[in-house]
Image (tube, rainbow, N blue to C red; front, side, top):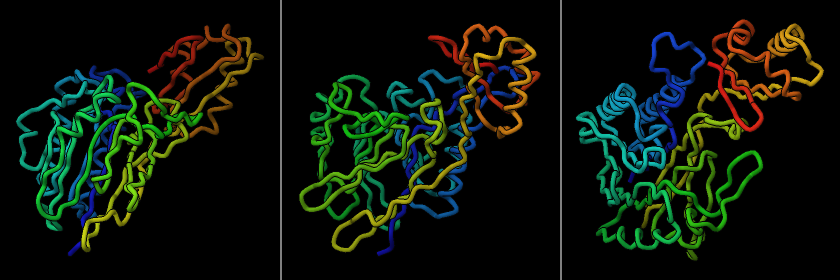
Length: 339
């Protein structure tokens, strides 16, 4: 029997920093997120993958303008026309419900807007996906009941996957390597079932794989991470998606998991020393630093002396920085963007 290939991605956050007004300037990053989604889907077509799974947070919030929803759905519809099925799970940003239009009624698009078991017959065999939308409060106590409701009673040989969008004990995030531990909104690692061949999970923006020991082997808990950086906490994290190869002898097994990196904008903290005391000095300092900066970089400006913040108004920044560079200013206690 031939291998089965699955492309897994998550947290695309479409609509993030997307300008809806004409003439809103070019410092916005909205196109970056649509671009990376298209890169993943086009790669899946080139590699002739059998299935694509999106593990939540397709959009950046629950109420998304129709323009952005329609654009996303057109992309999904065109992809589904390639003959590759795509499964989409609602995340916390969508408040656990993905918007539906006539385009998402394509037979190759499968929205999991409620807990369900999805059975797909692919060329290499049957795939069964048990999934549920993001539970935004109290998942620790609710998880056992959800699993019971999703109890698999599938006859025949099939690849079994659990799909969710939650925090899981042991997952690591942020520059300080914060590790999820016990909490009402965290699934205890011991509660993860061992009856699936793999668990696919969104919500955690850092890509990682945790292994669960089932007694007779291990199963991977796969976090694809986000496809673009949404905060400076992610500035050193590679962004991308996973390609999973599944093989079958007597039973299915995960034969390989490969991370494919996507282009993500570099992020830089630019610290202005307290010695800068005038507008002219600020201009010279920024111009000097700019010579060594990639024009696609996202910059966050920090001032050692808050009194120098008065120089950082939009007209001044527009004279210094190319229009391709999004700029944030770190204010004491607040963070504003200059776009």
